[in-house]
Image (tube, rainbow, N blue to C red):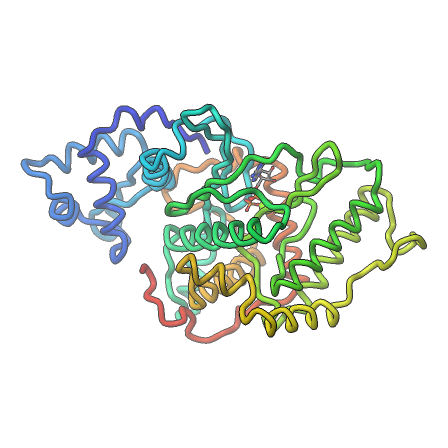
Length: 393
Ligand code: ADP
Ligand code: MG
């Protein structure tokens, strides 16, 4: 998707006031009626309507009158609110080229006033599967209807919290810099996704660093759950950086062993099939697979020693709560269910174009779905859902 930040400069204070009013209204309205926008924004003499027209022209708001008349934010509208917050905190001053497109995120290069470059990840949970998820949910008639704003915000909050904690514990992850709404600002890594690599100077060494990374995470009580060549960046010296954390789970998760094994097997498959290095045939390796029992024991010992694991500390500090984790896991499980129906339409009325999702984005998306299918349903069958949170915050 294109992010035309030039419009940022043309928008007035009132325009942002109205945009924020719509965001607030969406906490309990799918569409926010004009009268409510009027009263939240507090603008007089039809001021809100004038701004609405400007915001619509810039595709920041969407107007809908199918069931009742109202407005809601587009992805870009939400992007603008997050970017404006990061700008006003002095963390960024310009948005540059797009460097990544995932199924559920867009990543841009951004700069600050000192000319430093960072990566900005904008989460888009529900971009390709929201309609499918929603219709299935309606059909089942028992799920909460979470908005993409809420889900994307949760994913960003979780990703930021984990990235920060992992970075502070010396893990090779980007430096977490800031989080607002569905946006995560992080250090830009000068490396390529490992999926683009076909030959390695030292495959055994890289393979072992993958296994070491999986084991060290587990020893801290964490399983990545998407540990694969798409989420590992590799630099010229064949050093790794791990990215993409919204799906991480605790080692105490009911399916922990399966999820752990799936991460390990993904890497073995990649090295065997794409790099031409078969770990099982390398007699010089100290081990091929880390044993789950060993890392689980290490995690339990560490938890007993310092009271809490990385997970709990990180989550507590960020305000991310257990019920949020449940919401995310439920969503991820539902995306798999919905994916099985083969429907992947965008959110209705949204001006997203599928051709802007690169082949690679699709590849990873397919891979994720395949992985999840292979790896169990992750709480997808629970009744009721929602863990007590209200659907739209
Ligand atoms: P998704 O959740 O959509 O898969 P990722 O976090 O995996 O998003 O990022 C998608 C792509 O964006 C990566 O494969 C990588 O090419 C690029 N990318 C993400 N974060 C960074 C970063 N900090 N530095 C450099 N490139 C990045
Ligand atoms: Mg990814």
